[in-house]
Image (cartoon, rainbow, N blue to C red; front, side, top):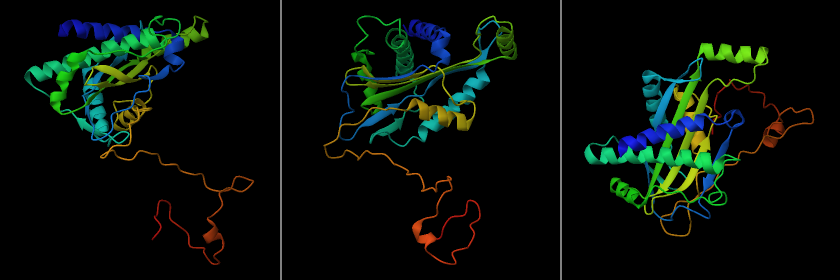
Amino acid sequence: MRIFIGIFAVLSLTLASAQPASAQFGGLERTEVKDGYEIRAGETNILVFRPSVRVGSQTTGGMHEPNAEWTETAKANLITALAEVHGAQGTNLVMVPEQEGEMADLVEEYTALFGTVAGAVLAHKMTYGNRLPTKKDQFDWTLGEEAARLKELGGDYGLFFLTYDSYGSTGRKVLQGLALVLGGGFVPSGTHIGYAGLVDLETGDLVWLNVDTSMGGDPRTVEGAEKRVAQLMEEFPRKAAGEPGAEPTGEVIVLPPPTAEDGTVLPPEDEADTEGATEEHEPGAEDTP
């Protein structure tokens, strides 16, 4: 069963990477949330499962060539970046450590199953012209009620991540350049896909999915992994409010500084009105309270 799911997940990724150029390079970036869904109010723990990561190079012929070193580096960087995400919409994010025995098998199966379902949503819900009539106007995908077994790890929801990067090789880039010069059409070089999904472990339903088929951020670097995680967590669902224990939600708004007509940034009024305020600040120096 696990092998079958794993193979199906790989096929789903392969199909995703075989999307039309308009999908890959037009920046297909979509988020789906189950209609009207909000994360349950109160104390809520979200289990963050270790991401499924595949990194390699794209050969001249367009095939994916896995690179174990890149994959391990990217996975470590992404786990570190995920561990630094302190809550989302007032929830507690709990990183799931490496498991052993039956629980390790269960986590592996559901991580692979998430990849399969996410690939199906991309192909049959998010991709215009390929939508299933029964899925066009609704988002009702599920990993099944048995997903509740994951609650033993101490969470109410499961947050899954899956990334796939295939960097264009030198030969691929040369082919791309030649095709442009000789009018041979557009030859894509490199594929970068990411999925993030939230599963309600009470029901097994996939309640939120964020997909980007042209992701930014190189997960082989610390900075790139942080950027990748930030993109994957965009438009995370809201948490219902109104019950004790719910943390306040909100956002920080940074207003632009006042400027003159020529675009010059004006000093604050209290400084502008103070004569002799000519002390210079070193770049990066902090003001003394």
